[in-house]
Image: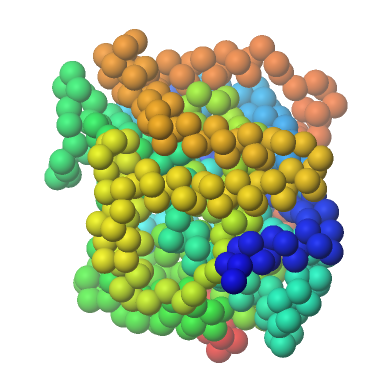
Length: 525
């Protein structure tokens, strides 16, 4: 009997459904710290010439006022988000006043924690909520963790694929319910296999010692100021990155949309004693939005999220309940310091293959035991992925890492052939085959290349990262935007500033009432 993946691939080919995959849609969200010419975190406000961080379509900030986030529109052409992201960099470099963009995921030279400015979004209720939510992140987890940068890859399967695939699977569910459950199957397989992406593309094996001040760790030291993992792939995905004890015990279920929403809402409704001790408000300043395990949905750190475009003021879980899953957001991608924009075309092609593989491969429910196995396997790859003798030793998988990874890549190659037939080229297969080489030669991985470059050419991670930031700034200074393109970005900046002013002028309720109304949306879920 054919396994599920082969059966689905053959069914798709038989009805020529693979042609619809040329309409997959993609968007990128890329974070970068603004830094001074000496590599310290910028203390300046978000440049007014970049527009309003609250309302700009494409340029905003994340946790810190200095942490820029570029957001591309959604495109079908695989090169369009890359070219748009390039233009965002070109425009931004033209607006920066003697500052640089940091091109590594792990941050720059860090001073005292309080020197990390929290992002400001103006005086409107929605702007203050965004700001005070970040106050909550500060009081709960500290500010250092929030300076780590990455790329989020948003991808959706085409509508015309779903209607036929629904029939091929002989599903008795309503179409939107089938789509949502299929996306959750994709997510479960992604969680099982995300370590493969981290090994192949992780690019943060080292960090400046200033980031670790006062923190216990087991990293090796290189020439006093650099801390690194000898076989590591991604500090960003390790316990030193997006990790916290309060969320470690969360049991968020990905076995269905209703279970996911209920478990996430439970965390948002459940008080947590250490956060209760912090309190909510002091002298009119909010320390956090509430004292529950999660303030809002976005506080839950995960390597992938089911998403639906929200309406103004709508909670993400309510959007999912009301209209189902629309796309997935992959959050496991380190910045590539060797690429001016942090990501390449070949990496996007690989992620497309990986996403489609996770969709088409059989995806049973994840038990609590398997959830723990997935966490253990990922952390082993994060910290020891380049060790030639690494074995996965969780209760669920006990195998040499490279054999496990090779098995997945061989199956992914079949999916890549499907995409190649749709696009009439071999680019997807070529990129999968190139990743197989990294299993045989771990020195080809980005994490290994980062460490080799540091050891060979620099005295520290900081010197390496500073050099890459300077090289990137020179790269973009040589290709400024033309007057037409620059005018379009300046027009959006002006529009966003006016939009923020309008929102602030139209507020007619207190911030306290705004918060009550926002959290009252629980009833819809």
